[in-house]
Length: 375
Image 1 (cartoon, rainbow, N blue to C red):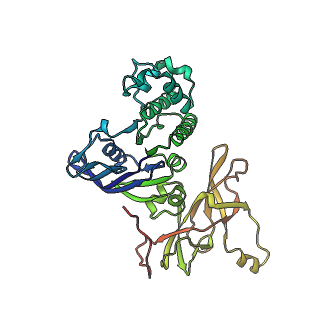
Image 2: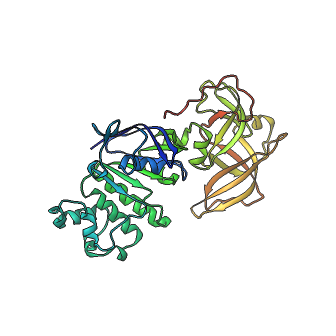
Image 3: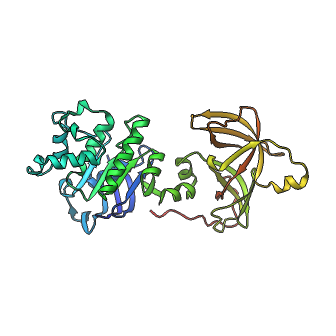
């Protein structure tokens, strides 16, 4: 088992700096997903770790061994890494057994027991050992590519968007099989992806990258529920922002009084993040008196303007009917069996605490102590 440590890595492509002082630690026998949009530098980082690209500066350690550093450069084939690309890159002229054992010592290439063990490890039948790659499905090919990467018991496994070419159902089943195989081998893993659901479900740690820098690194639940900035919040899933005013850890907005998760000294004008899964809908019921209306401080009336049905659930767009102000729009995620009709009116309730950010309208806050990400 090996810890991967990346320190101060800068790297350029065609004279333009792509990575700007990247720091990242991947603890032994854990998986870190590097998540970001296309062109942000995540594949460049993987190429540096793999040894396919020399960085401009910085250091990469595999356990106690420096493989990249000032005056140090270890060739890719001597780093003891496993690498799986998006295409799998199986050799078409070799059968499954030949692909798996490629790169192993000559004696190991005749180890049919090891081939059968690896096939079973990635959830495939040993009977596939004699088949050619063109006789396999896309998901099977990716599992064979992983088996080949694991054959030499690598220190670290690098996955470069290995599931993106698969259809949705096959992607999930292949990802689950790969995750189980990596956990069995207690591998240290870096996954590069632009798929938010994949990163959150597959990894122990998520590193969000924008423009060659990490904006946030943390556990999946942490980066999703407590994003450090608006860009990370919107990249990780559906996000609605409402203007509000924060006082003593409570934010007043179009949805009433909400508890702030991260006040951190922030006060005055702010923006509050609402995730669709926090929003609950019920049939509109008029309060019987003023006291009831005042008690329902976490409720608001809304009109359904759009509903996107996905079978198991639905995403409902709502226009808040707050008296005396411009209408605000939020989204709610509901069960597919309980989707309100477009044009109907509902009562909106928000569950849990809400993340707040400094106001983006230019008006200064009295205090601002929103934490910044460590790079």
